[in-house]
Length: 192
Image 1: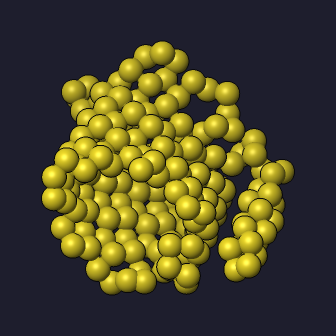
Image 2: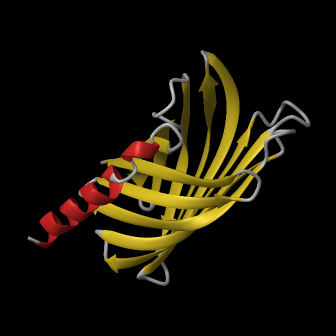
Image 3: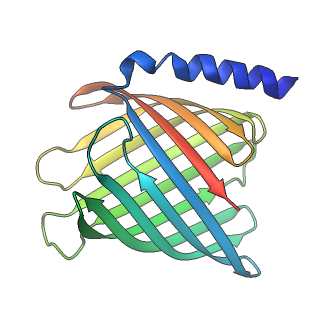
């Protein structure tokens, strides 16, 4: 019964963004970690940065993953693909749930590190408080893009997350320091 109530609340919450789809970033993320030893695995991500626009952009990464107690780390290489042109990418993802029910997560991406001076760095940091563990969380986030030479993005905002099995939905309202507020929706599918 409780999960049905959360499902209904999430449908109402996410449908409220419907009129904003043209201006809302809707990110689809597929993630998997295959264990190859005790606490060691291979991680991979497939990301469609914004399914609301018609651009042909996506990101794919793969690399080693390590989990020690309440800490985990993924260090990956991959590509950012836009209009059939691939650009190399270095990606580090870090998670800590040492202070449960509070969880911290960070993502650092360096796009085209060999370009010299025209590279892009994405820094994403979030902190969540799990009101209902692994089902419902409230949090804060900061998503920033730097070093691209013209359109830096610096933002912070609140978020709400609902989890249904291997799928999670996060809605965020970000305050962008250079171009006003933005809504973000992230749908993450954690494949076993």
